[in-house]
Image (cartoon, rainbow, N blue to C red; front, side):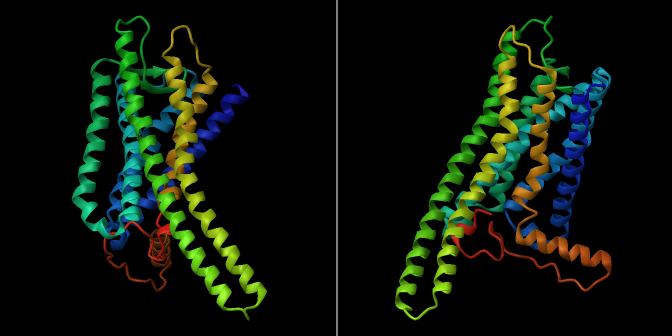
Length: 341
């Protein structure tokens, strides 16, 4: 076996384990904490984690088997089923991320109207659309036999067999699918999170003005205290920018290589290197391992739930799981610039 194949195999195993464990933790937190269940974005995170878990159970091991054996590891029927799930789940995850960005945009830009603009009913409608959108493309590809094993990606995925007719239709289908399932969510992410960043910076400037005015009044304050205040101002501005960069950057880094490779592959007489195809697939898989940390596990409610569950398992005294009101912000965040978390 080639060294590159070994490295890719190990990479897939690591991504699978991290993705499965971290998303299961998110699912356990949702089940355990009434506070998390009461929040509207908890529904989007639940849907996102559920899709990532299924991908880690079905699609990642299938890709690992294909990468190791260099051949289709399953029967045509089972491979078609995995291809269907791959198309369905991948589109569902990207739309769930777009829904989360819309939720946080409303929470930050329209905080007083959040409870009216983003109700549980609205979240259910958005989640239902993600499922219908994903199912429509998946079932269409399955019925048209545009699913199968691709040696380029060592995966059961969207695939066009060269001897079949209808290549133009497959190209049109692929472009529409990639545009609506990847490009459109990216546009939504950029629009919403940049609006959030604009509001966060505005509030940071207001806080900065108040801080400077306070420092000017307190003439007898020690220089070290002034320095710490100014340093905290800088950190506050950087924190908001960093979070937005993580939300958008992780999406672009993980999905862009795979989507660009898919589009390039549609051109005639272009052959994609197998190792690069598998690597781009691994990058897309890695988003499932990053999502729990980007969207949930590092937030205060999830940390609290994890600590409570750990104490319960160890038989220690635990804090009761309280039911909170619907909100998209952490319990310890009281500023608009912190709501982006």
